[in-house]
Amino acid sequence: MVIGAQKSGTTALFEYLSAHPDVAPPTTKEINYFLCGTLHARGLEYYHSHFPAPDPGHPSRVTFEASPNYLTSAEAPGRIRDYDPRMKLLCLLRDPVPRAFSAWQMYRRWTKRNPDWFFEWIYECDREIGRDRYVRRGPCFGEDFEADMRFELEVLAQGRRTEMPILRHGDYREQLEGFLACFPREQLWIEDQGRFVRETRAVLGEVEEFVGLAPTDPADSDLEPVFVGSYRREVPEGAAELLRDHYAAANRELFALLGRELSWA
Image 1: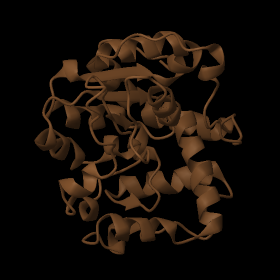
Image 2 (image 1 turned 30 degrees about the horizontal axis):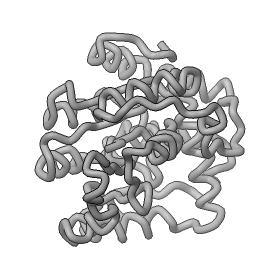
Image 3 (image 1 turned 180 degrees about the vertical axis):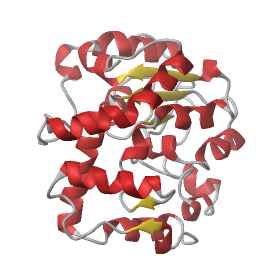
């Protein structure tokens, strides 16, 4: 199970794993069964309907899912453990500053299409969660990244959360501890998205070994970049400085938890 992080290469990992001859992929990437209360309430028959039936002629074949929002969910770790405490969990982490900028650009695009998309998604995901739990962003959302991040920081300082939360997705230490409270460390594979981009073949080999798949040697053409959004790549410097300061303590705690630094140290 690929549990995250959002905007950190999970689509590429999903596509590469789906191409493995011993993997039978699900019908959709982001099932979100363990995240959304309304989906979880539908039961295992609904969940299992997203996966292919066992193949008697290929008994070693495995299946998987990739729902990157599991990482930020308080409920997902316990629900996944209750489903299968032996689950192997895969997690890609990205420098939280450009990750936030990428998420902001994605949300900006979605908001232009439908200004109410977030609350519609929340209602479909868990109808017990009301709109009053989230502070609505203003009509100028998407015009200035730094201004939108300052607004979110002010809301967080009040102990509240915004609609379309962005910054919390980069607080990896807190999120990983939720999973480590439910699973032993050896069942959680964690890697740097930057290394995944630079050393794709080597990282996929490590994933295969971790999951228990036979090693493969994919052609270079099969490792082309997947879903590289046409977003602006460089984070505006003022916003980058603001977010580097915001994430400094969380990054130190993350590296201490992992016992190693990642590429954005």
